Length: 301
View 1 (cartoon, one colour):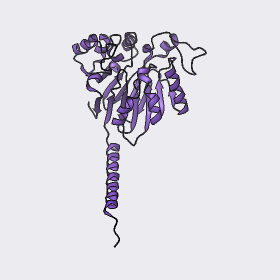
View 2: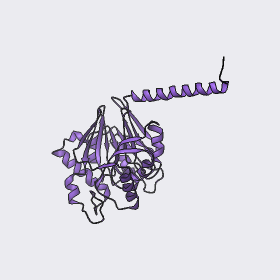
View 3: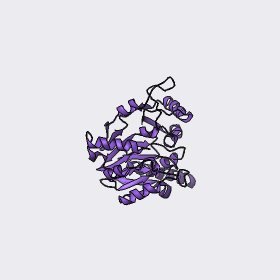
View 4: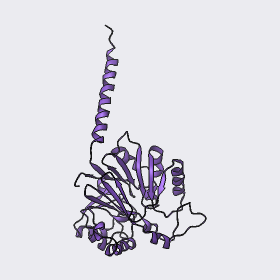
């Protein structure tokens, strides 16, 4: 009876077992209903990877450079090369720069971003890539709610009125975008993700001006409870020109996450902000200390 040489048998067995392992990994991921939120260590910048119910991939900002790829390679399944929703909180490079590299390796179906355009070579390069890849761009409206399986994303800021009052269009403004003479941080997208009863509030580089306007909304048309959250992404890398005591008390988070680069030149996070968080008994988690900050959610944190 003809027999394969031992080396070929070994190769076939190895290939078979490898296929089994791949299938087991795939199906264990597919049927895992846990949601994972990773505040990636991207240095001095923001980048948060979210995988909802092991079905939908969301990326909120992407840091300044290619370091975001390390985070995606670590936490995103190897067989998945599609990011269903990308969000750029505002157009500063420490929030969007990584997308220049992501688009070379991954498909992005939809991009949500602030309507305020930042005139820069890097941003123009990104818009060209987005156009080449046929990525759909949307500017989320205030109070827009998007349901994703059992999860919900709702946007709070910026309001249409604030954008109209504080921005303009000229001959150099790309189609659909607007420009401003104000600090771009004032136009950061602010939104929450709620999944399995856990709320995460994303704040970009929001300023005290913006947070005060949200508090004013909360006094009237907008229910104050909508600001409350279990996990708060601390605005502007823990800068003293971000979080306020009033907003922190209303949000009342269990965890405060600071996405910040180690030994950065800006002095982030501010001691004032750290003291503020400690005074409110908020558990502080920092990417410059822990590296990637990971939360696994299935009914609780």
